[in-house]
Length: 464
Ligand code: SAH
Image (cartoon, rainbow, N blue to C red):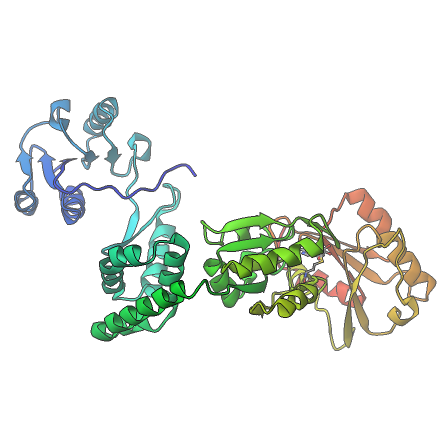
């Protein structure tokens, strides 16, 4: 991050604009919306700008800029087309430690003006750190569409209850849960549709219920077993995203990408479970116990897993423990690595001419060997997909050939599929082990075997 986004309180503070034209007017407008006293310095100042300054309890000064104009200023904006003046304003402000913005001259600025979505008291500020102003405008448009028009009313209503909720619910976790539940309830919709009285009644009821619950003891939390997909955050489901933002504590695996971790609620506790292939570095028992304990403490626990939790994810085992302990849970499927990697590598797993079935297998070696029913795997028109198969790659290729699969059957190895680091190599069964070694391909990888792999030549669309 090159810039620190902050929201500055400039109410009743002197804010200086150097320049008297239309750009200065726009900036003055913005400052006066934030209730600053606008102080304009320019030899010629437009009428509208004059009027705006007066209305803001500010002043206009018909002079050439000098550093003296910056006395007691909270910030300064240079909006002139004279480079020498812009330079002088920037230098003077910097020497006095006053935040300065020079319109369209990022190198002279100590702060940038963001694009804003103004639904005061709700404000969204957007910046591309000066790299792509059109992109920020587009983002602004997208945000305008998703933010309800009356979100200001909801924010004001919530604001009016803040003090009372704080008095009644002393525990910060309980307060957080109260507000989150309120946002998930019918109350926002009541406010948006103008039915504020009903909303107030509903809030009062919730507050009473919550106090009652606090007296009768803590309520049981719940566990969300969520598949995070293979890596690309755009492949998360909407439900996964919603629960990711709701959870108080997150237990996550090694395979969950950094990009996805960034989508979690920033203040959630994040606990790394660090699974390497099938053997967890934190024992499965410990994970199961932690899930139960955290839920019993009343927490909303997110168990976040790569891909889909029910495909080579031991999700079933974790749920069994929860069910036994009477902990409520829900499961959110994710895009499994086989599906994600196949799509992003341009390999359809089934195809009318090539494969009528597909099998997902684990290629994880146990005590150095792979005990699979090889004879059942060698079938016409069947695609095989191996998870955790890189260390067993040689065995897989050798065994399939030994059990009758053609040595020239196409095979693809996809590393970190769907992410920006995706690598794909394709070859024939007989030569893939050597190629994989040569290219230094690394786990996590998905291995796809079958003539469908040839489709990649035509269907590859993602990555270099
Ligand atoms: N539950 C997961 C699989 C967990 S087993 C799912 O449904 O995808 C872990 C194995 O998944 C890894 O060893 C690797 O074989 C595969 N895998 C997971 N993410 C992957 C990715 N982005 N690219 C390639 N393989 C991946």
